[in-house]
Amino acid sequence: MLNPGEGRPMSKALIIGGSVGGLFAANMLRSIGWEAAVFERNAEELTRRGAGISTHPQLHDVTRRLGIPFDDSMGIHIDTVVFLDREGRCYDRRPTLRFMSSWGRVPPRRDETS
Ligand SMILES: Cc1cc2nc3c(=O)[nH]c(=O)nc-3n(C[C@H](O)[C@H](O)[C@H](O)COP(=O)(O)OP(=O)(O)OC[C@H]3O[C@@H](n4cnc5c(N)ncnc54)[C@H](O)[C@@H]3O)c2cc1C
Image (cartoon, rainbow, N blue to C red; front, side):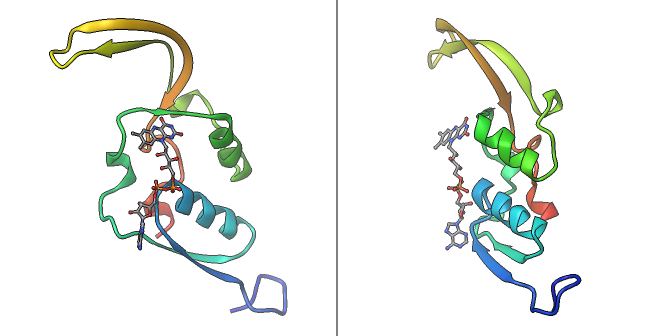
């Protein structure tokens, strides 16, 4: 197979691991014309992992580089962290400034790369 508009074979990558690192790598490679296949041993969808994911500037940057602006639709702003004991009673509250998301909100999802 040839790269679009070029006379050389398309570069190919096999990526082992289809969690956040593997999926972003596959999408980045595809954005520059590579063929990328992702192999994940865990059949469970990413969306089932993690109740709340604290986001970071690096995550915002990589989604932006894929042409997906990281906006408020991808999670919620929180201003307090509440600590619960085993019985569900609050034993501490601390102020924070975070933007929390989940793998159901942050692209790319596995079904878009398989
Ligand atoms: C409790 C906890 C909470 C966290 N909270 C946050 C948070 O709020 N915000 C944040 O940014 N980060 C958080 N992190 C860190 C975040 O989870 C990791 O930085 C991130 O998952 C690393 O992504 P990765 O794709 O490099 O590796 P992983 O997520 O570890 O993925 C590796 C993947 O490779 C697969 N795999 C491994 N070997 C093979 C093989 N031989 N064949 C096929 N598949 C294979 C595995 O099944 C797995 O899906 C948290 C981590 C933990 C443990």
